[in-house]
Length: 253
Image: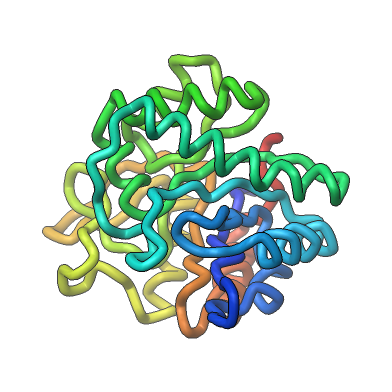
């Protein structure tokens, strides 16, 4: 029997704008990455998502982003390490207030979108994010792309890290995610995505876009909460993993 964490990006509504089905997804995951207002989310949504996670016994984490609300945090920006440190610490602190009010704690931090992909390759940026996590609370788990600079930076600073894999994203031969906008970058077919998640969790391998397979460490698998079928997909993923002998379990921390 294998255990793995199943995480989802959540709390991405703000104001009158609604995204995702957090209530429908929450019963099927073990970790919620809560948007902190920079790419999505607002103060009311953050509070509601924390309380929803508490009701389901789901661990919460800060989903930190570049300040890019209009671009949903998916546009690359030139950010010096000191600024990356500050924006990470700022967003963790915002979520921590709601966590404390709900008698919860932040279990993990995961960058979002462009910041996530940039930190996977840029050692200085990864170090800045890891330092912000350590300086806030060295017990928090840092989540990053499996085998990338971000978990390496966290380990170098003595943090616990979680190497992350994706059920519904295509992979390149170097272990990076196929860039959005490339045909096939997002695996829309639920059966194919579930099969990929099972292979990752049970075998430690993932098929790559060119051909062949890549060895991949995965401590946690991501479910994208902005999929149109997010709730159904989360359920099918949970059930598919269970059928393969993989238990969805709360992460360390």
